[in-house]
Length: 250
Image (cartoon, rainbow, N blue to C red; front, top):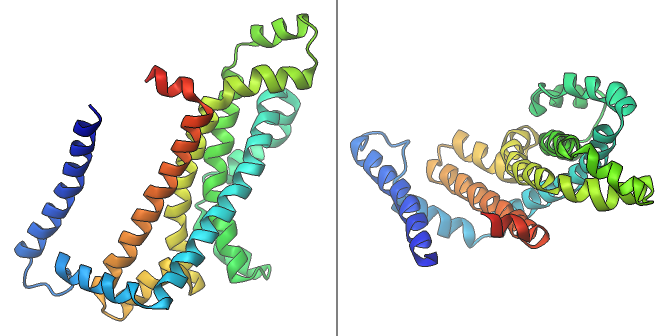
């Protein structure tokens, strides 16, 4: 069964390559559409230099740093809002008003208040990851049956014990979903933020585009795709270890 699943996943990736190769043949007269061999050659050329790996390391650090900060803020805040009606009334309306604003739209405002480009990129990634974590945590907490908390209290559990041993375990599946989605959105927001910051993989892609080095554009896109996939896979693996009952149920 496992080998069949791997084969299906490989077929999915091969199908993308086949569509790409077919498109390059259909639009063979368009030099802006690089072929797979051209991209492979550009990837080898980029991989032999330190500049490309420096941009990869910088972008990866930005994503993971901002993601961890978003998780450290979003999960406790979601627990607070989900458990307290007062906190929900005081905090949630303001957060819900801010949520529809695209993270990249904050760039001009943050520039005006003298944030450095590096911190602006981190803040934009933080916003992209923060709201999925927050909302999924709130939903998970509020989905826990109140009878469970009441039963724990009747058995002598304090509020902190009820939160730790009843509410948090019940909300973990939803928190886990938010963490997985947040990692993907963090990588999505990275490219747009880095285009404006003149560093990282986002700028590598934009700089290649403006220079007409279209194979390098695809190289940057592939790098973001691989890093984003690996990051989400890491979060899923950690979640599988922390929530083994979800894996057995599926």
